[in-house]
Length: 191
Image (cartoon, rainbow, N blue to C red; front, side, top):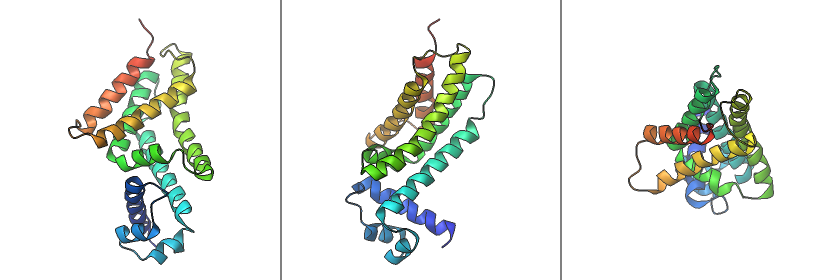
């Protein structure tokens, strides 16, 4: 199966998981939405759990790539954090179904939780590293960079979900810039 076909299955699975939740999602529905035979999905994935895990891994990989592309470290941790947050926000706003899955499935089965949380920790750790660099040079205020990084990731994810639910959401670039400005304002020391 070509990479394009797998991405087609991932897109269909993301739609179905976001619409129905993991427990109510059916491989039949995913196959129909993807325009493939159910057996095609089972040929590549042992079942719904494996498909979901592969889907989350793919989205996390894409998110990390997007952040890395726009978040190359510089000498300015404030600018680095702003660029990373904006890149993350833009990705999640463009992939709102992923934000829905992140929030709705974070508390799934214990096995899904373990795999899912370890992937999320990778993203949070990247934010934490920028915060640590900023704390070392006095550019940020934070008691615990890990907690601050998790809070930043959570606010981006929830905002992406919120904008998917309201009728008059501003454009994605405006939302991404606003999130970044609010994050930066929250971690800068009072001067």
